[in-house]
Picture 1: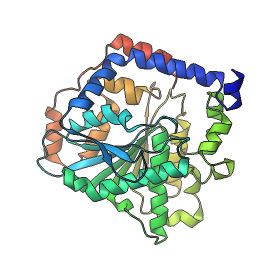
Picture 2 (picture 1 turned 180 degrees about the vertical axis):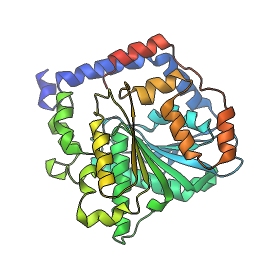
Picture 3 (picture 1 turned 90 degrees about the vertical axis):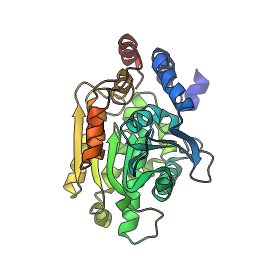
Length: 342
């Protein structure tokens, strides 16, 4: 396929697209149930407009009963900066809403519709919208948690850290880092310099990746693991929320070293940071297969307990809640894990 090679779409990338199709087919029984719940649930507010761009939309997942202000998770989906979509957060949103947590799943411009600056701008605008408007939907504006997965973890961390830098310099902002109680980064990459060649080996060509990130000279600018050590931005560290990173030890898409290094850097500059590694888990286990499996889930339970920490009534309701429903047969989950392109 010389034509595709010429524009940076290699054979490995095409094979991964094929594997992605097979992966989705195997998980289809579970995914269709998620789609059905998303489409017909009375507790989902779909495609709320938060900005002027075509992709400036968010989906809001609400608990069954809004009997008081609820904590809020703002979620930024992954998708290799190319296929991110707010709908990828549906399973997480539905399941967290069952635990009395409101979830806002943000959409944002993808490449080539936009580059990394546009993505960060969109996500920051979405966070601002949630901070200003979530009370109308029963959310507690004083208990907002920011969460991103994969590319979404990179984008959301950039949005958070850039906001902290602006605030520390006294610049005018549309939302405050103080609104964010904690940041959850799942399977993210935070040093782009270390990922360029890695992604190229896995089929995402260097030329495409650099185009997304606005050129090689911009990689440090969009690498929180690097720019947070700049002495000129050290004042921003003191206003950052608690940063919690989660990563599977068998993640081949973004190796766990990415989170290990970032936490080490954050601690070195004085930020509150914590890393939890999940032994034997891959890039998709934590976000797709395990949630579809239902039942106990270490990552899900940790996030729920963290968000509800200090709320005795909420924790009591969580303890009494039925286990999460299995949505996909185990054999299909195992086969999907074996051919996952991620």
